[in-house]
Length: 426
Image (cartoon, rainbow, N blue to C red):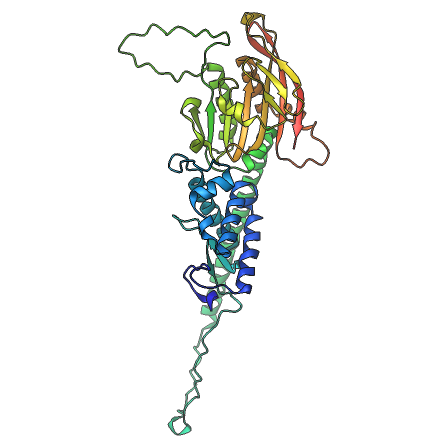
């Protein structure tokens, strides 16, 4: 039967029965509802597409360009060599399938896979533990009676143990079990101390970061905005460097770097690895399907792209403002044509959400001006400010995506008190 095969099978190689097709579809449903897949949109859609068209024998629909057009809205003539979106998604699906089967273990009756180099799904039917055949042992009495010889068996004498030896053995046994009990108590005590320390550490973590930390365990990439020409079109003159000094275009503002460091220090307290990268050297392959923090606003295109679909977003560069995405209402803006020391108010966005752009969890810390970016970073690291933010969550909200628009008082170019202006939870 097919379920006892150890090799992979597809309908093109071995015909599937109706029962086997039902098992595959049941397993597909379980996979799509599992932890490794339910947090994403594109990976479940691609896996289901590949499995169903494989079952229907429509393998011509499982070519890379066809998948890019149907699943990822690519134009019909797009170049697969320069746009690896399908290959990247398939690689991520294989990784998540491995995570799923690590979780379910032997409970799965069929194993679904997407082999490297193809998008045609393959299936392995595994023998169920309760139905696996066990070879019967030969009957020891089988054969002719004429060839059976009964030999007398002498009883084995019982060993003679002295009372002193028996008492010593009992004491040694008790000592052994006491040692085991002691080690168990030590282990329980250590686990209790570790649990208390972890609980205390959790209490020290601002609620703003808790969801982001809980759902991520790998390294976090922090993408920092870079210095750009002034809003009036002027640029800073090149610094008077001598010819033997290496010149770079990767200038990062001190305020944005400081804000990124604040965020990374929070993650470091929880043992997470935080890596920094300049926005000019960051492309989709760097942030795809991985936790990311984007710092800065008009100097960070990733912030402008990822906030377009959330409740509050940044307006065009000519606006230098924050808008209500649904109504287009202007929430607040900054006039940079006046001297910096005359700017009295700045605005920023802090948000934590799952981004459709990167297909991963994202935190945004972004101010219209550098003053509010620093204030926003400080806001996310203070426990009492997080409590103030989440006190505005609607009844029944169980965690997930959230966003806040902040307004910051500015005195002589230095950020002061920050207030919550708008919030959104979804």
